[in-house]
Length: 130
Image: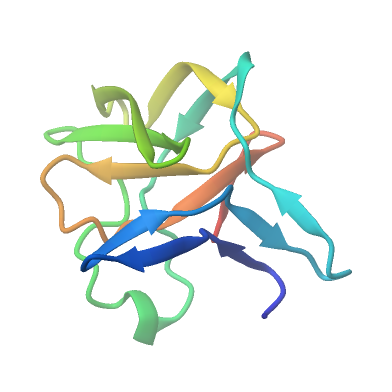
């Protein structure tokens, strides 16, 4: 298994992908950082893009990166499947989501998108892309 990668354990059953465990990141020292949302502690998240363009080859086909004030965005967190936190439109090219379960794995989607946006964690006020 590669390090510095987010893993979402799943099984393929009856032609369907079924969650099978808590997501984790395999760190450089080969320890697992478990990404389990803390539903007793909450944070505010300030977001300004759905995807970070790293490699031209891997993200070139994704149509939007920065937020569009005319679109609606959905923030999800992982809890045995993607759970919707809230829907918002961008103000001044950013979104602020309040009372988000801390320490989770998140996914910001443009509503009705192809769902190609990247997953991320939120650490020290920054989106960390996986």
